[in-house]
Image (cartoon, helix red, strand yellow):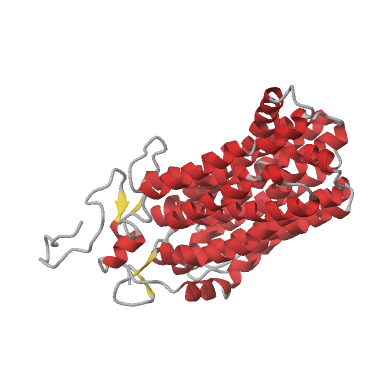
Length: 480
């Protein structure tokens, strides 16, 4: 709403809402200073819940095919390399999407992009049953992989809605609950819907084949519906949608190219790019590998392997949130130094657990180690995005996109290892790489923030957020 400033008599800055349910900080563009999980009010908590729900269903359709790969392999007579090629293409294609969507978030906001990608990705998901060869499987998974780009909107949206003192927790919660879709899809698609569809088509000549060809229509319809609902029932920012803010002169039009250039030229972005490759990239790899690994190594059925593989994703229910929470708490105690030490420790332990998992011979032991391995993988993801909003606030969208693309780049690199090597050798290489990435935190140097072994936090700068102003195309510090 627009009006007149009661103190100066000047026209007040336009914003959609006169008041908010949550406590906000006017100096940080009306971002919320608290998180109320059981609240669904607009704009802050509505965006929070649509953020994780949208990413959840995106993750679900992205990996809906994973627990069915052993059945597809049998039907089409595919080799291990052909299956892994499709998995690599499925996560590799998302790299471009994340690079593209990051700067677009800075320009148009998360809501429109989220809706567009979800609705688009639901179409190839519904076409899963048309696959007839290794080539068509790879092409299909390439287009479905566009759903993975929604991670950028997921993280940007909460960074736009919550202040820095809680943004690590907010980002981690929505990212973690979204990633949970990777575990739920293993269980729902592999252990529930697939056997249900087999039962429906039990009188047909080959019920298993008909089941995997039809079952993906269910998540496709759900994804399209959620995308449409998101567009009509949420907001881009605390003060309203970007098109409304620009129309009323309350927000400048941001150059996507300038935003990307600023984020890409920041050295810290690429350090976090590598570290995110070694946590989220590991999770994506496990989403593709887990069901096949447990089925082949321990001679399980498709349904049993899918149920066990789902455990890895289910840890997202709280693990990523814990990573963000610990990062925020460490920041409260020791500033950026606390966040960096949290990041390093989580990555180091994660890498060690991967090496243990590679050398675990029993099914029971492998499940136990995988649980703890998964916990640290996802906690490291949460701590990574506890750092992201500090790197360069005006270019948060672009930086989120670049670092998010790091996760997919890691998945492609690790996927190549699993494609060419035995499982044990691939896990050892992955674990060693993760351990090496943990030391890179020593090289992160963010202006106004402490480093791991030196420097002090500039408190005013640390708590400052930047927003576009209508007077200039640049992004200016709101506290300047």
